[in-house]
Amino acid sequence: MNRSLLLGLGLLAACSVDQGYEADSGDSFDEAPEATDDRTLPGYGRPFDFGGTVWQDQKEFVESGLRCGNEMTHFEYVAMEAELAANPAYQEALERAEQGAYRAATSIPVYVHIITKGTSRADGNIPDSMIAEQISILNTAYAGTQFSFNLVSTDRTTNASWYVAGPDTAAEAAMKTALRLGGKNSLNIYVSNPGDGLLGWATFPNWYASAPKDDGVVILNESLPGGTSAPYNLGDTATHEIGHWLGLYHTFQGGCTAQGDLVSDTPAERSPAYGCPTGRDSCKGKYFGVDPISNFMDYTDDACMDRFTLDQAARMTAAWSTYRD
Ligand SMILES: [Zn+2]
Image (cartoon, rainbow, N blue to C red; front, side, top):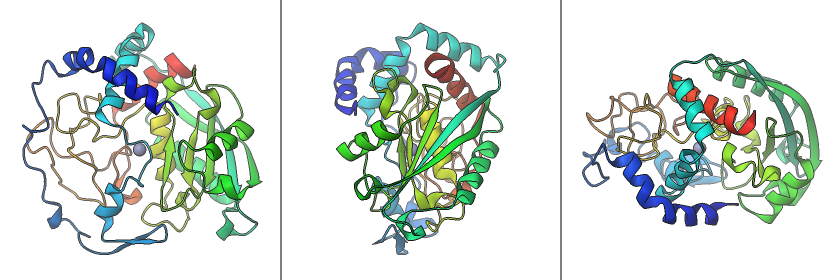
């Protein structure tokens, strides 16, 4: 959804927005320093068995696009920033939040939709205990933000087509139209098996007004805590996708540029990190140090990620008060 619209807006908006965000840096991808040599990282060249496919190594899996369905082109993210920049309410909220203005504690109502292709665990029928543990993981991950998560209901639907529905498909639209509950402040989590190892995807808050039924996140069932999708089975796929749902980009969005992911306290990062490459510095010496590999919005293993930053929390606060409050 909205992707072609975003692209069109991006083409229209690219010039003016680029002036706004890049005028002070003068950087380009070409001028950025050499990347870390991934061949020195653990796991390089070691087969990575995930989602029914044996990848050459974990790097190949991560670069396939299956780690998260929310990879945005430069034009798409420029277009989204243009939309946010054109909203005075958002800009004012962001300024206030970045100055540390009080943030009211917000309990987000959560509706979980389990999609199965049958009755067994292998058919996607995961137990309530894993859902409860997922909510607990979310509340720990977001403890430094204004947000907490309150499970309101869980429903289960057997539908072989919805079970494997990927992003921007007719099956996804049918599933969400039939099942979505609550208003703009309600988090709908669809738990399924989109296939090929795709871990999940999410909608952004500023998309809600034009596509309310599409709003929510879809995650791989076995990514829930206690699932089988190691090394992504500690529940942080949901943490990551909900970060998008609350308005965050990937930490590597924008690459080695000053604006990067539009969050000032996440160091610039040339490309996604995978595994847990301590000390990786893919934009060597530029923009505040080593890569934010422990950030929930990177692509590292669940065991490697444990934080959001203060400015990410501020961005989520601004998006919430503008689009979901
Ligand atoms: Zn993502």
